[in-house]
Image (cartoon, rainbow, N blue to C red; front, side, top):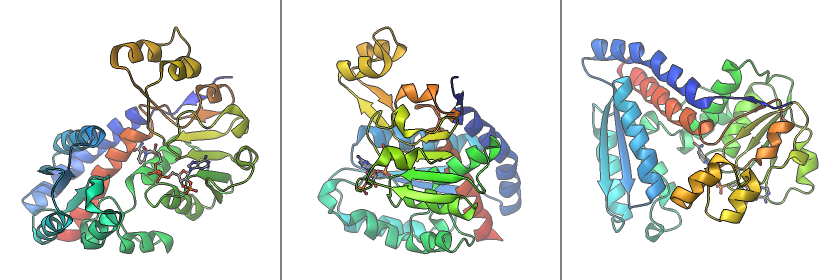
Length: 308
Ligand code: NAP
């Protein structure tokens, strides 16, 4: 039986619609809209696409969205100075510095930026203070991708409490916060990674399997317990025609798309998993739109906390 498709794009639309009256009420009360500052350094094409979406959706829900675009040779000190200015700006409630930063800024650039963002404006939920609050299950701003996944599971009526959850990936922005959010909702959680022996067997224990790896089609049906909910966080550009045909077939829409663009987007989950899983997020149209909707929610939350 084919898995139910968990339509993240539709849920994200509803979440934005739900936000609009709340944003309007905030604007009436505060005498200004919630303010979101987006900082984009360099010319990574994917980052430009993500920031463009964040800007469009922010404006659509009624935010003021300021885009601060800087060339790839901007120094880390200049970015930190911009972040400090935004920390001090009274009408800015949320600051998002798009990752990845140019590699020339150094290996610890992202950490230095996150150390500088005011935790009250940290709408990505990446500062040490907000991560610490998450660990302790206290009020804070939570990383958008895992928070969006919880919203999806809850709104789809997928039980978390008492279930076995496996998160593949232990990054600070997805894997670890995802595991904590599931833990706080009383799942029994395993975090798997590149050193986990017999990964398919570990994953087959999961009622909820979250794949946040960054390897196209890595999670095959032998990783999946029949009926499990599978959440595909991966966003991978597949450029090899042989791979596209191998994953989707020669007569597929993806192959047609590859012929036009030379690349297709796919997740970490192999398409054949749809025959085993009970529910599955598509890529695109699953976790990605939810991440942006949660960014909007976090910005409004930050704004409300700052003016109350
Ligand atoms: P990351 O920092 O590179 O982390 C990847 C994780 O996968 C690491 O913990 C790594 O293990 C693990 N891994 C790699 N190869 C593995 C293997 N063979 N077996 C088991 N685990 C393995 O990536 P990330 O930032 O978390 O992102 C993961 C994916 O999600 C990427 O495709 C990214 O583009 C996507 N993403 C999507 C959204 C969205 O909005 N949809 C948001 C964020 C990220 P080790 O720690 O042992 O190296």
